[in-house]
Length: 267
Image (cartoon, rainbow, N blue to C red; front, side, top):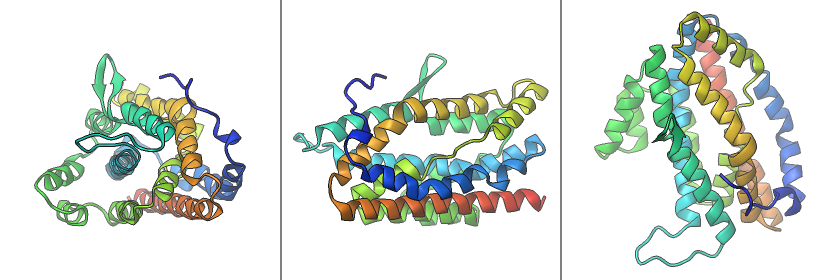
């Protein structure tokens, strides 16, 4: 994926640096979260994945909301005003919804489900949610009826609260800054060691983590930063609102990590 048409967001607005500085303490807290030291067996990984999959899933609703808001998806088609953001969001959608794995197209969500099945993590709840949504249930009802955990329901509720607000700069900020996992080496090392011990049951999960780091750092991360900068422009209020949305999104991720860590410690 070429970034030749993508300008560095740092050249657009110094407000981006202010926003990132505001988030730095939260990111430090996320990177050092006790969750990453709570894993002792593959059973713990399975438990983590059973909840984390909801964050993988609802990420796509943030992205699709941005695509719908920044591009023309109506017929007859007419061009939207911001060609740069249009390009950026479509590039990100291509990678997230139709990435290439072993020569076949697959969304990162579907790949995550495959990784769960490969290591024996339960997929029944998230699959039930998808079925209920296909049958016309609302997101809250689908989650409740499927028996999603309170932590998963709360996390998804925050995501869809931002979406319902309909403010693209806030949605872009939640998308860009709220999904930064800052996966530490200690966790990746644990997954690698478990995968070696289990003869490859976690190989697909390892690929997912590595791919996530690769595209966020080299491709989707810079694109998303550019998109936030485009949407906020020189509007100080929008930058403030984007910062608030970003903080709330990271805090929601921390709350999700807290809940999963507590669940692991109780078993």
